[in-house]
Length: 158
Image 1 (cartoon, rainbow, N blue to C red):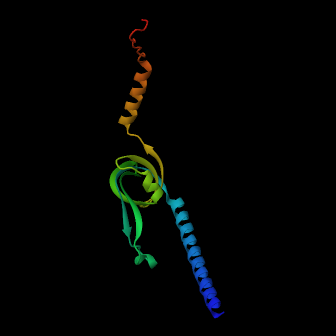
Image 2: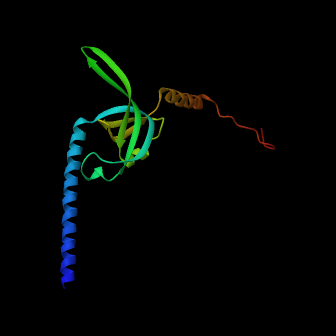
Image 3: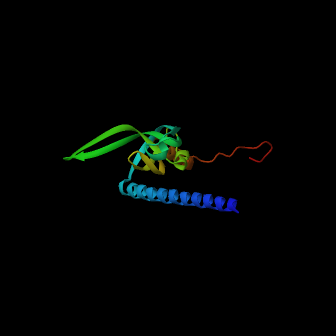
């Protein structure tokens, strides 16, 4: 009988601990989402490199346990207008992202992304280069203007 009381007590403690951790994690996620939605910007990023690392966190339990992080290195053009003067600067930035967004991204492609700080929230769309757009348009035009050739078959009527 004492055995079941001890097992029941341990089970209650484990469930209570899990519930507390779940509630704290949910609060932190809601705070992060609110901050992200308030500060997100849409940029065009040319992806130079991407990598998956196991890093230790900054605070709490994550200091001791390495967890996987997904990083994307991209080239971003940042513009600013000061006193009527437009200033642009290209810089390489290392972003963190989720596994789903990491899987969508390919190296040496340009994407339009929602970004806050150094975190990629979502990939909105892939941006085609002007050269690729022109070549696609030229192929389309030539396909429409070229007459279709009909080849003669052997033994067929001509």
